[in-house]
Picture 1 (cartoon, helix red, strand yellow):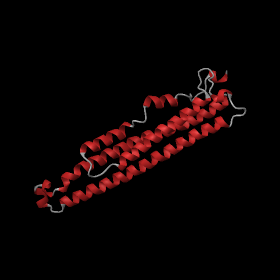
Picture 2 (picture 1 turned 90 degrees about the vertical axis):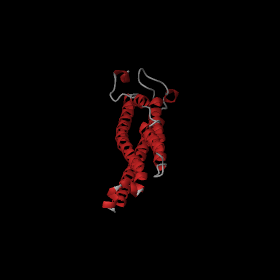
Picture 3 (picture 1 turned 60 degrees about the horizontal axis):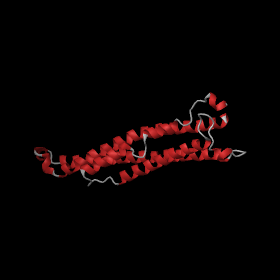
Picture 4 (picture 1 turned 45 degrees about the vertical axis):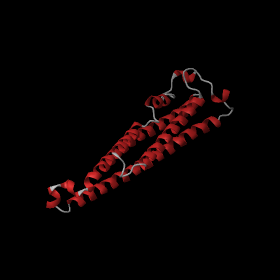
Length: 199
């Protein structure tokens, strides 16, 4: 039992490392989306040369140059955001592999565990709970990655300020990821063995 729990600890440790990378990607991508929204919000005011006032007369190329600069900035932001979305996809794929590896550990047991691995031993989770926890981590992060992709795909230059604000807020909130639930899953299998494992 201790040997098997040790293998699950390794998998849970890997999952925790992936979620740390997810958090870093979330911080970067949320900032990028907020920056993109700020650029888009400025575009209507830059479309009218008259808004530049006397500067447009003194520097005739300023309005066009400013618009070009904003367009280039938006392109750089969206390219960087696309890279972050790709990273989210890769992290979800890694979580998928981890939960499938956990399932294989359970299926490969010979003889098969009692009650198909659903029996607990002391304070430790059952084997099934270990597998389901990793599956849940994969599922909720998969759903969140799909939401992020959809939100970015709906991001357009003619979007209104309120629409942009709602999109940025939803992206930042990560509604599919409840911090308490995620922490509870990661704590399901302690990273260090306990005396209960050995009984």
